[in-house]
Image 1: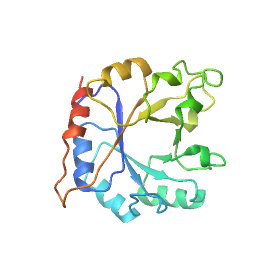
Image 2: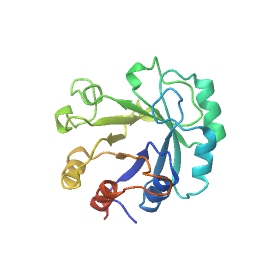
Image 3: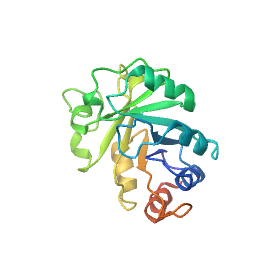
Image 4: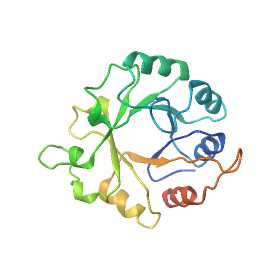
Length: 195
């Protein structure tokens, strides 16, 4: 299925989400691997779930308390292609990592017209949205930006046209019980993104 923009899904912690999102055309699945963060999973879970899907990036999410050596160990163990560094303002600097990083930043930091080369003002973003930018492109004229939040299928096309992000970061969820998950909200967003 072709989508209007790239999609990553964070908070993957079950097979239902992993398979559903991969099948709906997500480009990547984000697993919280930092044990200090809510919803964290272990490396064995990531490897097991990743074994059931194909054609998607496997991405790890980390907070600022885990040392770079441990992040790099998990990158290798889980065969991660990228990492997401949560709440980047709390990080002292981008750590030396074996794969590219997405940095979670505040809209006011990333899009202050005085400080950013990106043409989209902070006011273009509804409250409650987070932005992620690619660390490896920090020196570029305008780094690729990913928009994360609770998207309304009705306003999504306008939001994409206004912001023109590199992609969207959706939130996974918990199963009601093993093998049973309500995908109504996520399905509506994926349907709004179909070309």
